[in-house]
Image (cartoon, rainbow, N blue to C red; front, side):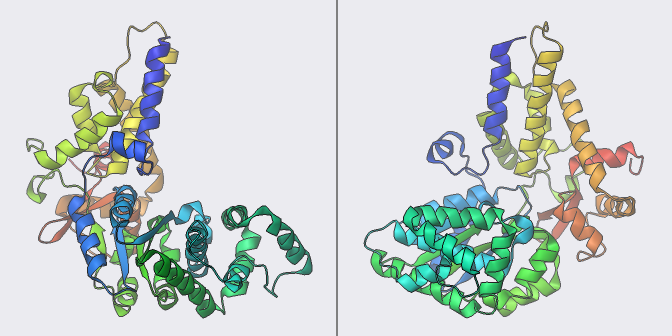
Length: 431
């Protein structure tokens, strides 16, 4: 087996996993300007907003929101005290509520404040947020927490963060503690933000990533039923939300009632005009298409992939960055398998044959998610580029699962994910 070639595919596989780009060295190596107009629009609106403005950022999962938000955080730093974090790093996704979102904000603000010697945090805030003085705790729990004081505040914050992520009992206790004291929790957030702003002379901006990965029932519970509590803090906050939730009139009504004029949408990259989306002779829009090719080439060395196959990988992504990565990684995996199964082969390269196998595997993944009752809906979207009911449960499921993609012109239009199109053809549901 060609060990050197295997290691190159292993490295490409790792490089393709570097989303979002967070670390400075990764940003330097891999960043490609993508979605800049969306970020600039959000940036300008934040700067022009009142001090307690709330912003919603939406888009298909994997379209590049996280990388864009991290870049936004970096660019807002000179004029703002920015707190950027992923909710997925703090809380089990199935256990997210409006209460522990606000608690996570408070913990992150406390962490930022304690890192600067010139910011004074009142003891009652620490006691309340870290559970040192809550009457709801059992005597045993209180004693255990008191023993943790000797660890130092940074270590205690790390410990509470780990508990928030891993221990359901801790989250349940948190809900009992603050569910009827939301105003107190929000007040602690506001006092922390005020202390940071006073010391730094810069307004606080909190950016929360990965809320767009919530299942829709949780989205409705948080953004519809508890929106007033979530939007109570008196500082700027950017929230994320699944694009499928934007299809829900009640969710949008709740957001509008709290002053959100409209979410900032990160649209799927459009390779073809609506009229040409199924025209096999049409050439893709060069400006958009070349960005995806550049992203691929920065992570997958050009000598490891056939040029024409690279173009097909981009086309099969449907304009979703995550799908580009998913297809390319599947190709790398297949090459690594081939290197072991056929160790005497002169070389293994990502070509059309490898891509066929990779797409087959991903097609099966989609097939497992699509109920038999949704195929007619997929065929209808494919033929009309429209949907009969954008708020129907079936359509929202397809949109949330990336089986249907939303594109923007003067009017919205929809298309079926290219890999799912292959599935429809295989089932002889379309020509």
